[in-house]
Image (cartoon, rainbow, N blue to C red; front, side, top):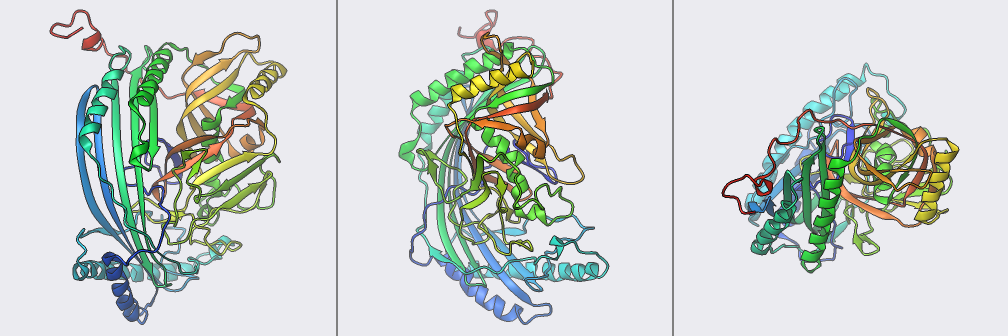
Length: 576
């Protein structure tokens, strides 16, 4: 579960960088006229099921999804325009299941790595019903043939395989049908003003001699999704999202890369951040970059640590959230950290955790993990995962467990991937809070009690990743950006660099001793088996009695031999 990279197998993570075509915060659906694309999908669905339900083997379930995507992007670097353009495309996905709800062609085989990608194809953007039906017909035939071959392998393999308890759970859950036809959404972007803005923003970064590279990217996405299935679900809903990302790179004298990142997200064009707000953020990023270039390195350390809200939010996403995803509980290759712990206390009694994709905002700030329906056509639901430290349930897609037979609306995926249970808005709350200043004083008290030379304050974070498979250690890693040493003798905090937070989940969760009283939000993109999806994590600051940090991976490359031309007095022809 990886923060900044496409995940390896059984590795997931939360990323602050955007995936261009991820699903986004959803507009509330209202009944609207039937779109032509939905008419074509329903007509072909009826025809296909009437024939293929009588086949050998028979289709018992068919689902059609069409994603209609408008995308606009403007990107600049170091005072100049890099790219500016817009696209529109449709993507068709057909799911045909042969066999039964109990056992079908998707059943995981122990000797076969699952395929997380979902076959699909481009579709016409014209609302031409005959053409759309032909495309759907062709893709349905292709998927049915593949499903029948897969079912043969499943039946053959089952004859010689021993099933685990969760391996005997049904392959697919029966769900109630849902019908919601919302209005089509559109984005209309004038790119010219944004072209000028990204030039100005990145030129401001270049005023610092420590900045090696800067990028500003504005994106606008309008996504209309249509879905029908043979259970009777019929959905059409629209989603919009605007984002501005600022990224700056530097390099410390010892070769360590220094990166700072900031982003702004909004749903309505009028809510775009003003130039003043953006330039203020740029100035802070420059100051932090210059300070980090000069900051000393930290040696490996184990001791008390205070994580501010954003850092704590990523901590819970990585350490707890991925291990609460339902499909991991039935895969024998997974570590299954919490599979047998429902009803047991896994966290301090003052901490509760829920995942609620129905929440669009918190204290006026957008939550990126908001959606109305998941990618399997099931309504999003508020799921109480931990109640006063006790594990209650898991996040569920339509891949059921023996003890949890239904989805709770968390089947999610990036286009081109198979939906699995994923986080949406993971929200951590505490019934016993103190002010952030009191939390700091408790940190200092712990440092003195443990006779440590300092504690750590983790103030900002890039993301993180975790290993959940049995082939790897059950460990996580969180990637801090801004870290301070906090001294027990009253000396000013010291900015340091070069550390990553590491640990194991069951131990780390029990080391939380106190929480702050002000929740903070991390909006980002999480990469895992079903691709990159938008998520939010919300948490107050947390105090951990013992946290381990290791040295960050560094580069052997040194900083450039010469300074940037604009900061070199000897550079000819360069305006000073």
